[in-house]
Amino acid sequence: SQQGEEDPQALSIQEGENATMNCSYKTSINNLQWYRQNSGRGLVHLILIRSNEREKHSGRLRVTLDTSKKSSSLLITASRAADTASYFCATSGTYKYIFGTGTRLKVLA
Amino acid sequence: DAGITQSPRHKVTETGTPVTLRCHQTENHRYMYWYRQDPGHGLRLIHYSYGVKDTDKGEVSDGYSVSRSKTEDFLLTLESATSSQTSVYFCAISDPTVGDTQYFGPGTRLTVL
Image 1 (cartoon, rainbow over the protein chains, first blue to last red):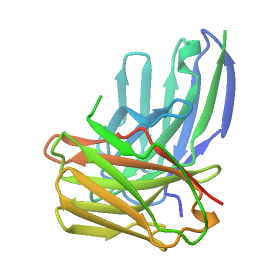
Image 2: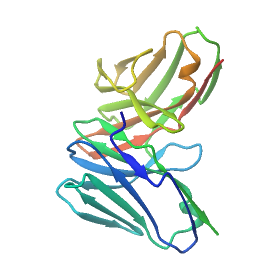
Image 3: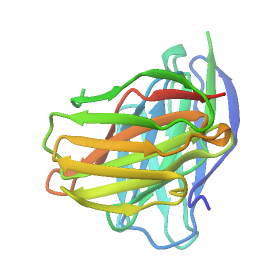
């Protein structure tokens, strides 16, 4: 069964708006990562947050982690049409990664 | 981009035939993974390898076998392909000595008729 479940499954916003997607997981983790997948391509790593961290920033990305609720959120600020992609969270235990089902983000120009 | 290639990139085959997918890396990463991606299921781990000749099963390993005779190559074999194995297959690599990030190949689209 999937460890991570993203919410919403799909999101459509206007360029310049912020996009927030959430991930819930079931067991203890070492870290949680977010990946992006453009249509027809492999996944690309965006950001990693460790289990002892609560918030992390990278450019227009902000990730939060709440281990008590077993949840994480990814915020993309000032979205661009090029951000249109699917976004996946992945939890890492012992060298194995479990991916969620993804959020499809569409940014309208 | 991480040096990961997959071959073939596309394949159409018939039910019951054997199929082998190849993943090749130039990064000398210790860990290699095979995932399948299907609509509504995200990525599911099939098998992974933690070193030459060291492999283990993932979440959906039935009907698949793997081999790793060299650090750079990880083969995924469908002994007798079935229509339920129609999917997009991704290879990934990682190495704990350089961090926990996974790097993905471009994928192989497999259709079993």
